[in-house]
Amino acid sequence: MIGRLPPLTALRAFEAAARHMSFVKAAEELSVTPAALSFQIKSLEEHLGAPLFHRLNRAVALTEAGTALVPGTSDGFQSLSNAWRAAQRLQDEQSLTVTAGPAFTAKWLAPRLYEFAQAHPEVELRFSASLKMMDFGRDAIDVAIRFGYDNDAGLYSLPLAEEWVAPVMTPHLAALYPDAESLTSAPLIFDDSINFLQPRCDWKAWFAAVGIDFDPRHGPRFSQADHAVDAALAGVGVVLGRRALVVKDIADGRLVMPVNTALSTRARFRFLCPQGTENRQQVRAFREWMLHEISKTTYITEALHIVESVERPI
Image 1 (cartoon, helix red, strand yellow):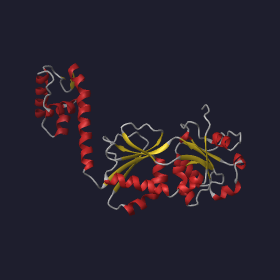
Image 2 (cartoon, rainbow, N blue to C red):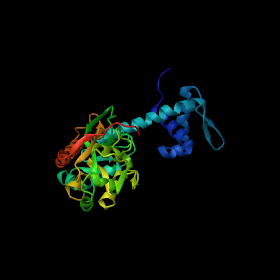
Image 3 (cartoon, rainbow, N blue to C red):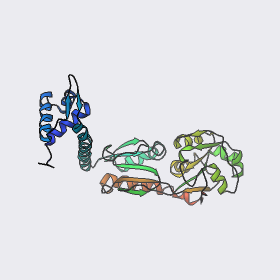
Image 4 (cartoon, rainbow, N blue to C red):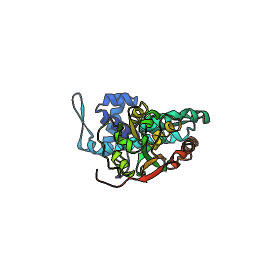
């Protein structure tokens, strides 16, 4: 009958054999004998009315019909696997897997994890520090923290706090370069990870915001924001630090802002999770804890003069 699906076990046997291009390896994966797997594929071919494999001497090759069947079966079993793992995770009220970029993990999450562990000893946190776009189902991720512009269709998305960049340095350097004019002769650090921001939030834009026509080009450049901040902490120079990545160091006195002008950006760190999971016990606890931690340093933002960067060509 046209449209009637064959048995799932036969499709599973075909998908494994097509992925391995070997009946023997597919049989090992599915814990069946090669003869049993061959029987399943033969029954599938009878159901279709056409061969799916060319049987060669010591190998197999897909026929035209087999090639047409591969994408759908592969995607279908992957979707089933993702759905099953998602259903299993909903039964787990103790573990929470979070992915965030390396800089946010190092500078925001890691220094505060003790407080979360103390407040929520029942939650087992697992972290994946990566900038790769994760698939919540495939990668078994519960929460993602991502920086950029809102493009989160289909997800629960909560912008965390207003982001800005401002010059930060050690107290020793601040004594040498106490104002905006003096920063034109200061050793400047470049964080290239924010070059995608529009309007630009670089040194030229910051100097323009304080009324100084200065376009510095020389100084150490870092592709990772946390490395740029670490260089500033080591006294290498002055960096335009992003709020989320420097507020704890500012609050603890390791970094200071002698000039209180900051550039705002529409980009935000966002708390992301699949729609409908935002009120799971451990997800809600983690979100509320993050918001509480952010509230502890809002006084730093309130003391700043925050201006918008002017749109200009890259």
